[in-house]
Length: 344
Image 1 (cartoon, helix red, strand yellow):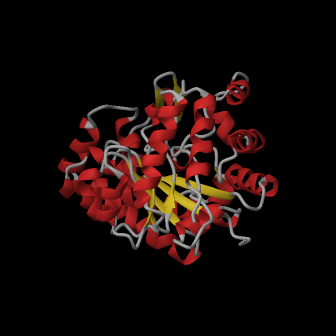
Image 2: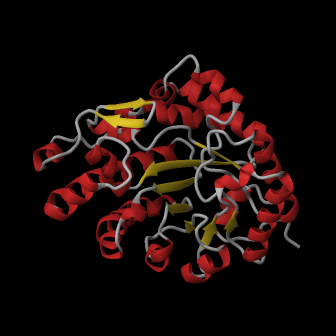
Image 3: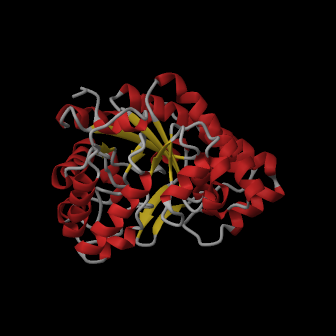
């Protein structure tokens, strides 16, 4: 058996003994152990405290027995280092100084990870030191468009009117913002690999709100810059863009080794459109985990059957675990994937 973690081999489209599985938001509010940590600290303090961030990262892996740990942090942590005044309230993230002008963009700093975000590297080193060798460690960042949308809106939104207005009214300003974020993202991801990350995922959670021409110009263009900036590191990369089933062919050109797809498209169809020369990650609907275990197993098996045993399939949800998901249902999913995902 190879010394390289199962997930890393799958992302490289190498032969594997079974389909690997990890889950977006696998360390989160659905777990009593996570809630026990959070009752004493706010979310940003948890992200900033490497001992606690490592604890919740590792607990999730131990409880679920998934094939990878993913850094516990948030996509707005680098934005905070750039100068965004970030808070997390009941409704989600809030930024007190949203971007409104070219001057606002010019005032943003490009973070120096070892100086501005030392706790991220400390968390990764602590996790890698405690993580079993066969389990991979995933680093991540938000894609430029998604981070920019938060920095412009100043909060979560359903329609992105402020973001799209700035994008369309002053495209040069919006591109300058995306370029600044991309530069900082490259620096942060490179530092994560130096600290022990063995794979990297870029989250473009809000790119699906763009029409195809804007998706290409404002999301893919700058995500490509990020992937180009980390390609020499030699670690496999994953691109996740929520709600982009209509532009999958374009997404496949972003430069990532693996394309992660949501649940709104069948896996076989998504892989056909992406091309079988790329790995694919996905794609169970997170709400399927509210169903009975026998339904969860059937849905998982259907996705595995759609992959047809091809090299390069990583099982995941189409988005993060919902906060009220029963833990025993998550365990049922992982057990089903491990049993039905064995390769002959």
